[in-house]
Length: 122
Image 1: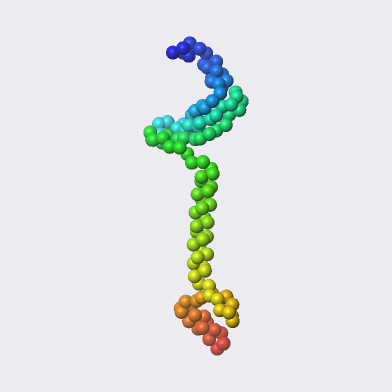
Image 2: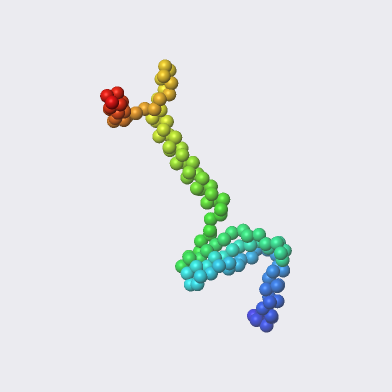
């Protein structure tokens, strides 16, 4: 009630001179989307963002951090590469006399033999 008589610019200055946690609406597209940023204010000029929240259709969510997004995507990529290596490892064969070779299915062997016969006949 007291602030209704104060100048609006003075109220804004008073808020910026305070220290501590501050919430600010940083983006809005009424009525469905609002983005709210949580800051830690150490001085009138030093402000550090702590978290970002968004309200979408009346439900509030905390936005994921960049670290969690990057780590999740990296982990997903590593899992896919691991699956590819496991699949490749299943087809590799080793014989002491010949060393490593790639295991072929019977269809691949027959196709290769047929191709070699065609080459020899030409």
